[in-house]
Image 1 (tube, rainbow, N blue to C red):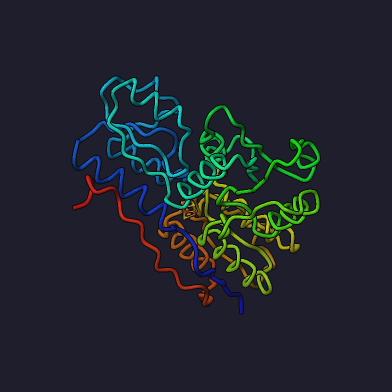
Image 2: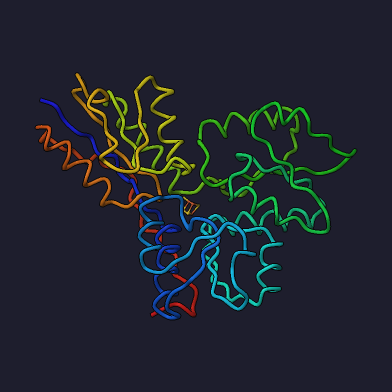
Amino acid sequence: MRQVLLANPRGFCAGVDRAIDIVEQALKKHGAPIYIRHEVVHNRYVVEDLKSKGAIFVERLREVPEGSIVIFSAHGVAKTVWKKADDLNLTVYDATCPLVTKVHKEVIRKQNQNTQVVLIGHTGHPEVEGTLGQSIDGKEVLLVEDEKDIAKIDLKDGQKISYTTQTTLSVDDTQQIVTELKKHFPDIDSPKKDDICYATQNRQDAVKQIINQAEVLIVLGSKNSSNSNRLKEIAEKNHVDAYLIDHYSELKDEWLENKETIGVTAGASAPEILVQEVIEYLKSLGISKVTEVTGAKEDVYFPPPKELRN
Ligand code: SF4
């Protein structure tokens, strides 16, 4: 009998829940419009929903009228963005995920100790830009995307080195880069606790669990969502076809043809309603057996800033 295996955990993490709550509470408190610098979380459905409630998304603060209310996205921002907000007399609510803020603080702490900080991450991702932008006193954080970048690191004699990572990377790929870094710099300082966040780790583990059986994996998430892309990659690396979609209407019949077991999951910024629509669609094709796999239990909660609490 054809069946669906539903990954668990999947979908919203505590950082995304908090970011969306901040926008909704700010809209309640101040009324529309509220400006949001960058997509508050990387999900088309969420962004369209917030737009309909009065949020205006911008990429640069110069698009925001002086004195307005602005929200920084969950990915975090460089220090220069805070400065610009101050210059424009903006009221800021910071939706940066506390786990990203933890990485920012680590960068500053290490730079204060005169340590060369290396950031493992993807060029151009807003979280990476925000973390690179934490540098103090003209010091530079070096971005390492792959092993080639490690070869380019030129440390001054006796200088200490440490690494930190983007929060939404592939756990396995990052481990390879860290191993390579340790070969080049045996004394490199590691973060006390992994910087890849609990939600990214748990969603990747859940996918690994279902692709043992699933012949195809459907990932709900937007194309610019880092952690959603990583879920798709895990399936592909294990020779399971995988598709990243925003909405069930993008499903193609040929993806599901002759597939007995269909895996379904969602990235950390994709709402559960999108998953349920996929399940309903699959049921309409006659696939009635849906099994939710047991995975890590999550009870992380990040409260919004004090000024926005009910
Ligand atoms: S994916 Fe991780 S780092 Fe990003 S918002 Fe969610 S909990 Fe925070």
